[in-house]
Image 1 (tube, rainbow, N blue to C red):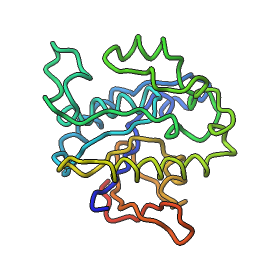
Image 2 (cartoon, rainbow, N blue to C red):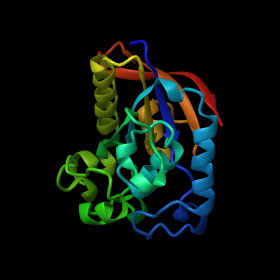
Image 3 (tube, rainbow, N blue to C red):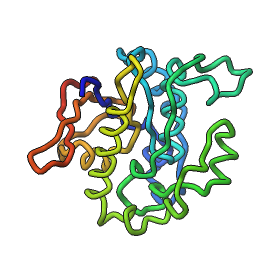
Image 4 (cartoon, rainbow, N blue to C red):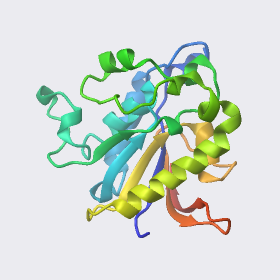
Length: 214
């Protein structure tokens, strides 16, 4: 596969500053919104992105929309905003990318809440109970979940018929360690690192780092 996967850590969220981990599904801070906007200015591969895949938590969705407004299709934004581009990249929401822990701050919102916050997005594809942190989404199943996400990304890349070959993944700091296979990866808020995706010796897909930017 010739395309790359760019892992992006969400921008600063309210619980990152007040350390109130009982806060449910917190939003970005004002600084987090600035970090997302700066990500959009400095990210060098915008013209190569075919799809942006985000965790369906509020802070990751906000980071994706604010950070890649110059890449995403205009249907994801209010018409009056002037954001988005015609024929732009797809925004896909993957519950497999949610954070590892079952703390309230790492637990997603109900569909009706998300619809009220992001009225231009389609949440109908999210499986029932994805935010309950059970079975595949439980903390104990994080490595199996990461393996499934890598397989999904490889399939998306193999099926892509566009000249734009890259995929952006907006996720969380702890889960990124499992997804990348690197327990030491620790990107700053709204930081990113690029990877190729390859088959490992055991037949499962792995991410291989190519470069990073902080």
